[in-house]
Image: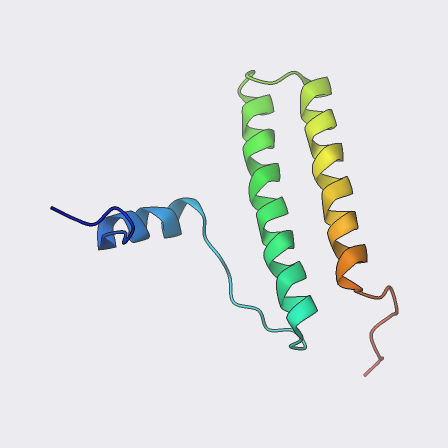
Length: 91
């Protein structure tokens, strides 16, 4: 019998497949890393909403409302993490 608190390798593999996470290659700060995780989650949810709307499970208006709500959450995340809007230095 497996401990439900510790996922087995099949469960980990399944989660990695359905919820992939990419490495972060930008300038490392705790804020940038947290925002990157939020951004990846945003993109993942947007892909689900898009697929549901394309498949006729969500109306275009429902999809738009959900995307708008997610966008507001992402903007709030950026603001609360103190990620600035300054332009990166030119090379």
